[in-house]
Length: 434
Image (cartoon, rainbow, N blue to C red):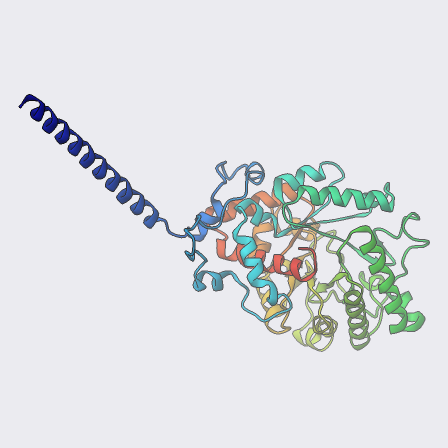
């Protein structure tokens, strides 16, 4: 009887233990299922800021942190892709020259941190010292290389230096310069790169018209690409026929129709030789003064632009130019209150009336026309909200910080930031940089 009693008690104990374990397992499964089922795709603002734990006052530190994931890990077969509404909100709404790569660019942008996204709308003037550290901190879309970068280097050291920059950048970079010819030559002025500096556009055109332009542009493209550059800030599309004009020496010195043909041939030749190019200085410099030294006001009527200044830009856009650079002139008939580079009205005109779907960039934001207008404050937020995709900056950390803080505060929306980042990344895919 005692043995039966003990057996029964042991059996009962085992049953109780088994029941407890089953109950515990059920609770664990229930809780696990609830946790997994509660995971949802992160909203855009969380995607942008995830992984940036440092304060907005120090985005340079956060940009070096591991890149955050755009969405949580999914169970096998589960679709966690973004909704069509979210994707449509940030993909540029056009069928333009980069549109085949918008979706790929959007997926790439989703994998980036906020600090990296902000960096992708800047082209910094490459500093003489600390260029790699600046890339590590800000991850810019690219560097603009001035004469001081090339002066003491050989072609081989230029190539190796740019390769070292690429090693520090998590997204391959745009490397550009102003190799216009004539008064603006950043590379060919030095004998280790060319037998002689490139001639001015006027000298080239006067020699044999379009034929000499094709040869000249081909030679420029071959030089730049051999060194590792992928964008020239040329051709100059401004119309000027008066030698007393500030911009005259940088133009072909001919009327609008002839300038339009020069621009068309230039763009086509750049594209044939694998180098991206930039039309400048929209909406047309005319006979205005030098914006490097202060504010300049253009009081010409809109008819002057529509019948003359716009023609070379229209020809270059039709030929496939990837970039348009906007001047700092205050153009009264378009926006009397702000320089063109800071004016939404000017950018809207370029997009809608001229139908440009590529990258819009500012002239250098450190030029005195801009610093006079802003009173020395960073213009990067105003320039970005005006509609520029790329901000050309010789004051990189200040301008970067200002835009970063504006996104964090909501002054610049995440959607607006993503629109330009997607266009920049799509351009890099199209240009073969990515």
